[in-house]
Image (tube, one colour):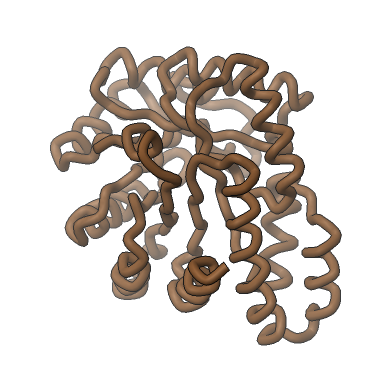
Length: 284
């Protein structure tokens, strides 16, 4: 079943996992997948580095998730990639019965300001995939507070519309803590003709440095409620972890109420705290 088919029937739940660094065992991520599978997610997404920097490990992770019995959403970035190379990767996924991909431009490597490959933007990758592999289900990235490199939210929404018109069938958003901004984003993309389902990306707020780093890196705002929690527990990691679990569970509920078609939790391969979030979320 493709992800859009799932989204027609329910508000989906999914988790993102990433491959371990070279030389590090897969045991940790294997346990994460096993533990989070108990919450019956609709799929797991598996990350893939820009330029294919961790390609083989990403393939191994996709196989691990598939063998666990869970559907896979394989990330696919196009920075530095040629068409033939992308086609080979996708054929490998299809051979393994992986029919869902998230088509991304990816981040430029340090010191590089151009693609260096056959695709400059994600809509070009999406169009190529839809033409070459029409049965493939393709997801697109969305940015409720705009991509950090976009000139405006309107131009960013126009780029999302182009991804849809090129063949994208659902949207998965970047992390966002501002539910009001997400709700406004939904209104604006619908007005712009983006009709495909939108899955909200949820970054749990477990740690001070990580939360600050991720919001700055992606140009996301920190609402007053979260800022107060971070400030109060800056020097209390255990305390922040506890309140972060409660905050993240409430945040997930708010995204559902704001109209998200699905919830995608960036697990950071930390199954214990994410499991605690899921338990609180189920009780909210």
